[in-house]
Image (tube, rainbow, N blue to C red; front, side, top):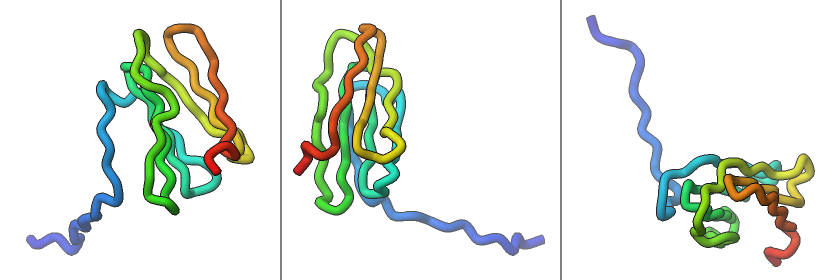
Length: 94
């Protein structure tokens, strides 16, 4: 019996490697921004319109475990195992 469902394939739009496994990702309400963080502590922001990425925080001694954009998409907050909460303004991207 042949399946009537077809498998779809999707093209990779962008790919970036962090130095350790990814612990969290978050899409902004502005659909052009995606943030990801890693167990090494890095925080990477990808901007779709410009097709470029920004390293907001380099790898450190502890993991960054959570991040989220504010409800209006103007800020990105991140926290991790060092107990520090960091907040970036998305307006500073230019």
